Length: 292
Image (cartoon, rainbow, N blue to C red; front, side, top):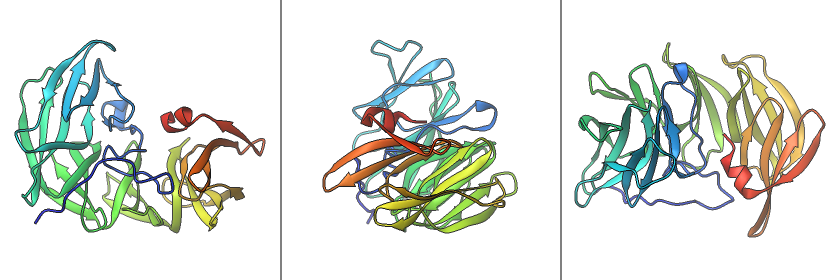
């Protein structure tokens, strides 16, 4: 029997993943043609269209305001699930059919025309990325594996177990442990199909910035270490030896800033740490979640 899926945040003490993939931001792809959208920020502009989701349907419009047009809706009893991939002309999305072992990946024009079945993936959870005619799809069972679905051949292949796509830069992708995002992290080269493990204890913040990979490793329950490496996994460097932060809530790391939370019980505050000045500044929760 197909495992029941649930939408929503998993709590501030856990890095939000998938299901709209919650925290995950739109990703950079080759030639900036395609990007992944999770609808967690409302309307998202892709090419000449704005895309958004409401009441389980996908809408598009050339205007930032207005009712828009429904371009995709699930058939009765089914659901449209997780992130979509689009280049502003075509949208790829996932339809869940409760009770079936497979979920269905469709394409549709932003005009709402030419809906086509692309392929099937067992227990697909979200479309997480795109590169050179392939969709990268996270599953919701077995620790969240990742599959690569070829749009032309309609064939799907699992490329990694218990790890999901976290960020993308050109042909490079970052993968971290499925549900907990606490442990092994990898760089994947879409051109070669090869994975390189960069750490056994990445806790959060896995990000591309300025042609490098940045990530946080846990020091203890209230602090992290900030590190980086090259796109090939080499030239590792420690930038911040110890930063007072909630290990599970480092939102993003750039070549200069670390966006993180501090939690105490059910309360939390958001901060930006400047690695150049070595100072932290409190920021709004809205700013924290909108960081790309």
